[in-house]
Image (tube, rainbow, N blue to C red; front, side, top):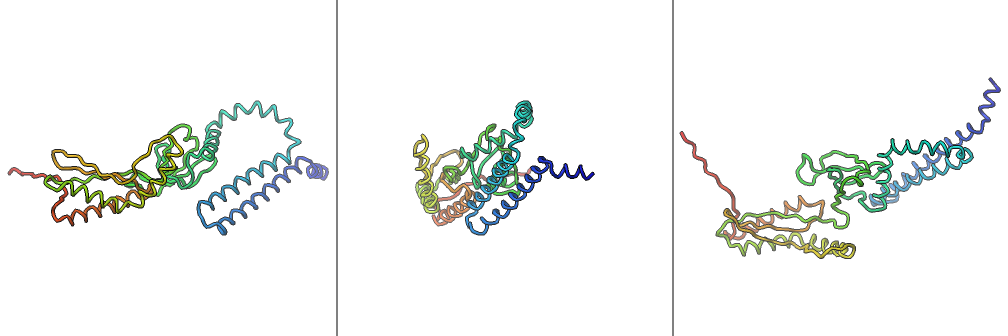
Length: 291
């Protein structure tokens, strides 16, 4: 028994395993300690998130280097076995490998980053985490109207970037074009109606227009795309019921719903101040009940 214990204690392989376990524990402890530092010294949440991700990634790299260094003399005989097993492993783990490749594409090809609003595989939401295998979204929409969080956290495989289109609502141009329609009665002063609608939209959305113009200039310089009008615009169309005015404008992608509410309130107030020159149209129905 004593001879067996001595042989086990002085076995080089056992020594290397113990050294590897100790080294990994040390790396884990150091990584956890370093994870606390960004929270103390970095105020910006985006920079703090990236710092923690970098620390984790460096921890993985160091762990791999330590393992290779400790077992370097044992790796020579594994070449043939790894070559035979490689094809089977690649086939069985193809989705995992594709997700890792997707992580590299997301990281270095700028598909999206944390904080972006995207649509992946039919799921729309804000990116809150990008892992090696999965992207985590805080979902918006579904049973909630508008661009509001519904409370669900969705994890999507990174392989989706190769299989389906990636819709990014905030990558190069953090604005969206939106529009509202206002039905105006026939007999109203339609020229005055167009004037007050344009003035109301311009006054309320001037800051968005300035920001959108600067962002669009960057896109024009980067891509083959023509210049676009980002200032509010009012168009009109007449039908058999009323005159329809459409207000088109650029808005911050996270403030579309609240901005639409503010715009409707301002328009209704402006129409009330017109003293009857402009009236909103509506459909009325008369039902006769036969006795």
